[in-house]
Length: 115
Length: 116
Image (cartoon, rainbow over all chains, first blue to last red; front, side, top):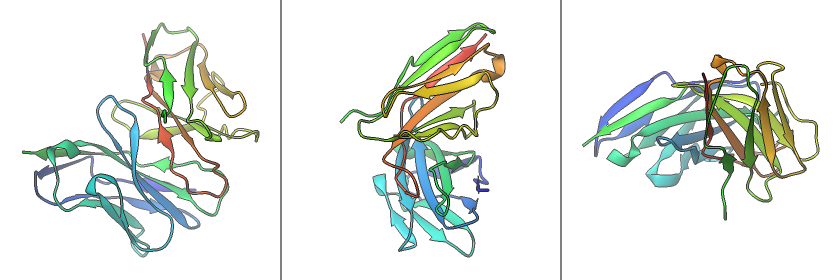
């Protein structure tokens, strides 16, 4: 079984400040981890993924995420948030040792960046 | 190139009616997925197609839900005898060949279904 937890329903941050969106996961095998962003009335957009290699992954729009195996976490970060980063963020995982590509998504974290 | 497209963008129906939702994946993507997103919640996996393999239907919530895909192209999700709890946004995604792979999924804009 695989699962994802996003412990914060909402994160508020002032523009220019660092942004962190938390994600923890559980899989039986090796995790493949993804972050997606959803803007109002739009589909999900892929931000970044971790498959193997460096624990720090860089993605679109200045976002990055750090894979921490011992803490089973994959937190999303941005050094300096923009008002336009306000959106709904989803972490997702799949077990790399099983066939198929069924992703399990977290419940989402709403980010509000205030000017 | 074109992304994943879905139609209709909005659908309002009466309880008990059947609805059909359509998804056009990105050309060349052999894998196609359907998800449901209820208001204020995360995505719930429904069904997954990979080429000519038998689909993974493990996420379909009841036998009122079914989906078909013709080859590696269009897919339709059918909900029979709709209930109010079926109201949600239905998202379709596609990806390159997915068995033991790590290809990201590309999502369409969704179909917002409202059952009155």
